[in-house]
Amino acid sequence: MVTQQDFDALRLELSVKAKNGVDFITAASLLWASIAGIWALPYSVSQKALFTFIVGGLMLPLALLLSKLFKTTWTVKSNPLQPLGLWLNFAQLFYFPFLIFVYIKAPQYFIMSYGIITGAHFFPYAWFFNQKAYAVWPGLIAFGCMFIGLRVSLDHLYLIPAFVAVSLLTLAVVLFFAHQRNKASYSPVAFGLS
Image (tube, rainbow, N blue to C red; front, side, top):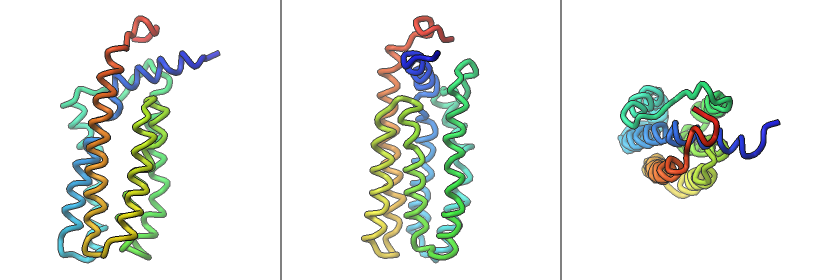
């Protein structure tokens, strides 16, 4: 039987080796900053939404590049929880029909919806990496996007992706320092991990 201590040891290993996913969060922050730039341009809302989809395709290559720079590990083959991280990320794809619907029927709400989905999809990582920041920031991002989306005019929708970019960058910093604390307490031998 797997105990809570066993789960905690496995999650600590993932937190340390994957550095709490800081490569993905930083990549997302950079992409959302570029998306803010797109939404500040004088194009139609539909064109901006389309460009946003295109820029979103750079997420994985940018995260891979940052993983090399930050020296993070994407796969910890000896850790049975590791595949769960990929599945949690795939869960976001099931929100895309809703996003496409919004793009077609109400493009003025596209960037707000995309921001809410992006923020909210990080919530399960609170358990996966055992990091409270992943429980707090998704709510801040989701409700922040909704608040901004309900209050600004179409000309100021760039504030939503700018808010998401700053929020994700702040989350990356918090996760980096959490990784530093976890790294100090991690010992593969003590946990029977390698």
